[in-house]
Image (cartoon, rainbow, N blue to C red; front, side, top):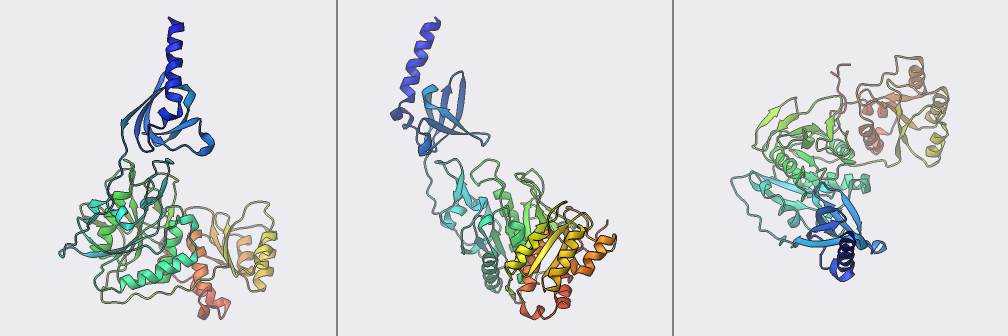
Length: 444
C-alpha cells in the first residue's frame, strides 16, 4: 500500500514538474498547488531566471512563497488572469466642483504586478482612474498632470520645486477648486513640508495623499484616501497644504493633517501618518461630512497663489549619539554645506566635543539648528548648561518643530538670498511660524 502510494506520488510529481505543465499556468492565474500534504491556493507569479526550478505563488495573505517544481504533486488553474481594458471615458458633471490631480508615483499609483508579485507604477492616468470610480461621485477631475513618476525615496528638492510651480499654476486656474497630489508614503512628509513653505498662504487647498497597500489588494487604503482627499480639495473651505489619510485601521474616515506637523510613524499600518505636537485640522468622511478639529486658513478663490521655490540643497540632518565624533561636521563643511539640523538629546543637549566643533564652524559661517530626537515635546536650550553653551556656540533651537520639517525649512530659508544677509535674519526666519511648523500652545 505504501509502495503504491509513493509510486503514485512520484508519477504525478514527474507529470507536473515538467516545464511544459508548469508553464500552462500564466502569471496572474489563480492556481491550486498540491505540495506534499499541503494544498496552496494563490496567484501564479513569474519566476526569475535564476530560479527556474522554483514556482512562485502570492498567497491571499499577501506573502510570496517559492515551491520546488520537483516536489509538486498537482497544479490546477482555478481562474485565468485577464487584463481589463484600462481606457475609460471620464464624464464631467457641471454640477460638481472641479479639481486637478498631480500623479507622482508611489504605491497609490501602482498596481500589482502578476509577474513579480510586487507593484509597479501605472502606465497612464487613465489606468489609475479605472480603479477608483467612486472618486467621481462628488467631483470632476478636470486636469491630470504627471510631472514625473517616482517613488518618494528618489525625489529631491528639484521635484519639490517642480510640484510647487505646478500647484501655483493649477491653483490660479479659476476653473479648479483644489489640487490632489498622489505620492509615495516613505518621504511624503518632506514633500508636504516643502510645499507648505514654497506655496505659503494659499487661496485653495493642496491635498497630498497616499496608500500603504497597492490599489488592487482587497485591503488597500487607496480608495478611501482618494475619496476623502477629493472632498477636501473640491468642497471644503480649508486652504492649506494638508495630508489626508486613514485615521485608524478601518475604512470609516480620514484625518486632515497639517503639512508641517505630520510624520509617518508606522511602516505598514494604514493609519501610518500622525500629527506630532499638534492635532488634525479635521476629520473627513466618505459621505462628505466634515468635522472641524482646529483652526485653519480659509479658502479665498479670488486670491492668487504665489510660489517661492528657491532652495539650498547643501543642508543636512544629523542625529547626535553618545560617543559620536564631531569630525563628521568637518566633512560637511569641507563639502561646502551651508547648514545642519542637529537632532540633539531629549530637551536639546550634546557633548562638550560637539559644542567646541559647532562653535568653530559656526564662526566660519555654518548655520546650526537644533531639534529633539524625541517624537513629542520641544527643545529648550536654557534648561541645562550644555544647552546654554550650544546657544552661545550658535545653535538655533527650534522648539517643537519636527526634524524633517526643520531640514526642509532650513534649505528653503538659505535658498532665498534676501534672508542670507545676516545670521540674525536667518535666525529670525527660522523662528518665524510661517506655515504652522511651531505650536506655541503645546502643553508639555
